[in-house]
Image 1: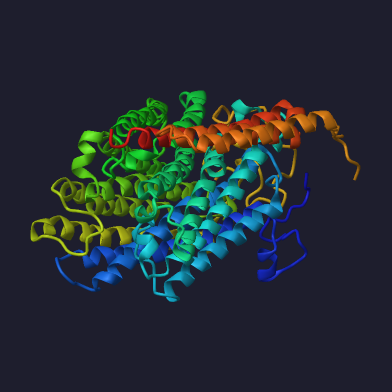
Image 2 (image 1 turned 180 degrees about the vertical axis):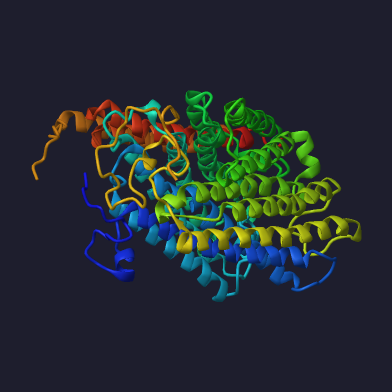
Amino acid sequence: MSSNSLSFWEDSGNGRTGIMAWLTTTDHKRIGLMYMYVILAMFIAGLCLGLAIRLELIAPGRTIMDAQTYNTVFTLHGVIMIFIVVIPSIPAAIGNLVLPIQLGAEDVAFPRLNLFSWYLYIGGTILALVSLFTGGGAPDTGWTFYVPFSEFTTTNVSVAVIAVFILGFSSILTGLNFITTIHRLRAPGMTWTKIPLFTWSLYATGWIQVLATPVLGITVLLIFAERVLGVGLFDPNKGGDPILYQHLFWIYSHPAVYIMILPAMGVVSDIIPVFARKPIFGYKTIAFSSLMIAFAGSLVWAHHMFTSGMSDTAVLIFSLLTFVVAIPSAIKVFNWTATLYKGSITVDPPLLYALGFIFLFSVGGLTGLILGSAGTDIHVHDTYFVVSHFHYVIFGGTGFGMFAAAHYWLPKYYGRMYNKTVAKVAFYILFIGFNLLYFPLFIIGLEGMPRRYYDYLPQYQEGHVISTVGSWILAVGVIIMLVNLIRGFTKGEKLKGRNPWGAATLEWTIPTPPPLLNFDKEPDTSRKPYDFQGVTPDE
Amino acid sequence: MSENHEHKHHILSIKTAGIILGLLLMLTAITVAVSRIDLGFMNVAAALALATTKALLVIMFFMHMKYESRFMQGIVFLCFLILAIFIGMTFFDLAYRGG
């Protein structure tokens, strides 16, 4: 254990200073922050693209861009947000910051591999950006790269799919690192039933990353082979099967939704008991439900394909399996609610964002059952209903989960607190903007407004106008939230103690900000992670 | 730094290696023969079953998985199980399409 009193900001551990100390670091905290800074930059880029899409759709016909530009903008919005922002957001950024400390470890199991993962992530991100400005222009396939269009479009799909391949490798290596760390680097006494639920969620996520991501890697390479060599795997003229592509794509991309949402569920599971001052209700069932979601969620991919021409038998089986995933998800929501029941609740910003998650994720989850049910899916497939459902789950779920995690954990790492009142105001603006943006899309989706269309019938304009105004309110909320966080972490009040929220997990027992090797004394693993007896906030 | 965990390398006897080689050649002949018979949608299943058997023999004997610890065997088995589930469930579509 380190007896060094310097924080990880002052002690790089590699003898270097300045930017090189960061670029060559193997410290999980610095790597986590490097992920976060890139994710933040790309989130803002993706957000601007989203705002441009909404502005274009405020009225039928051309508003600010032509149809081809619109196709590339929504593809970019999807690729950036999914592969570069949401998938690495909580696991790679917050996971790196928190996971080793929650286990009582000095670092992850393979620190150099961890840095390599970051470089792969940066390489993939740069290549994705290169694909915009080279070759035949930015890809226009949507983030799903569906064949046969992706095989024949003259836009720069080949480079984009290689970028996704590299980003996938980064994700696999991070998952592998976390699984190994959880198995091998737990402090003495840190039994499986004492592991905080955030780390449990990362364990389940890690397995999906390791087992499902290679399928995506192979699939995007096959697109590359199709485009370059004309193999004909997905081309019916050559005996290929375009639906096979959809199977391969969704074998990864549905579990990827759980790579996105499971860590956010872990964040909520860690935050709620702290602000309810009660042990979490049903610790073991929440931990087990993460594994159940990871497993069952890997068997439901073809519910994205009910209208693709797939066999009716497959539609029946995948529809049934989809309903099975709702069970472990509901277990979590009920357990969070039960934890809040009769709790001594303090409504601080992390809890507000966590509650926002529960509400928005529930809306997203329940509308998912409408989509998972084959009969109703036929009606709403490829409409704005799907767009709205997806954003309620991913933005309302993972996005709000990430915001909750940032408000909860980042003060520990920066050693400063943001303005809590401004954080709450930002939440309410965000929450109102979010619902104004996405809820009308459910309605126009049910009325038949198809997704990805550049133009639409005038009957849908009212919903689009409300949605676009909502996007502006949401953007204001995001700006206020980010400015408040950045201002707080650079100029905010310094934290005096180690445990501003009165949490019981190990990361709150170490100095603020943490030292290079995390612990200044042997971690005390005798306490359960949600046992708050005798623990009080020391702010 | 000293190496704490010793690996006992199992040496495969010439006889066993020869038997496995013979089995692999025989299975290759069966693969060729089966490819000439039209089994309908079972064509792919038969080809995959034969290929899996051959791969299993190579992994178990030539790659020494038979002599590894239960944990290592379990991890490798898990990967193949996941792959089998992915391929198997895709057949819920392929096998019944147009039916």
